[in-house]
Image (cartoon, rainbow, N blue to C red; front, side, top):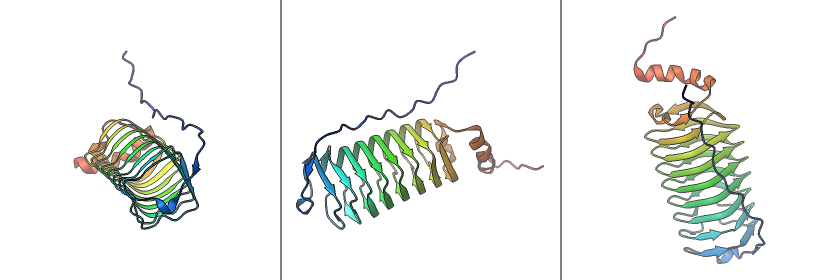
Length: 220
């Protein structure tokens, strides 16, 4: 009897414990390149930081309301207690990033590249990751209103103790995506579930949606 293929969990690197210096938030600008700096308790709202690169940096209790981070690169960086009613970070690169205990209202993260990213203990509104590439990503202990993964290529993505009201998987390409730790209210783009792992309970919850999509009439 052939063994059923197992679902591979995300491969997450542990961020190094490094010594950082205090960064000059007022001097931050577009296309900046910062390394081993920490920013704490600052307000970067309405700033244009597009194309900026942050290597082994940390952001703690930072406000990013309408901050322009398009095309930015976050590498081995920690984001803790971030407050961003609107976060503009499309076409950005996140590699070895930890986002913890943060609140993001609308996250414009489409066409982004995420590799080895952990999002934990955070409350997120609309998370737009359409057309993004996600590899080795974990959402844990999060509450998300709408997670838009339309057209996303996702590999080794998992959810633990996370609630999502609406999950959009339209034209998504999934491989080793573990949804068993995800509580959801609605899913759009059911065909995008190919390559995902669900629990038996979740499968029973999905059955009426599959029936509706396939035009199956179910009568007692």
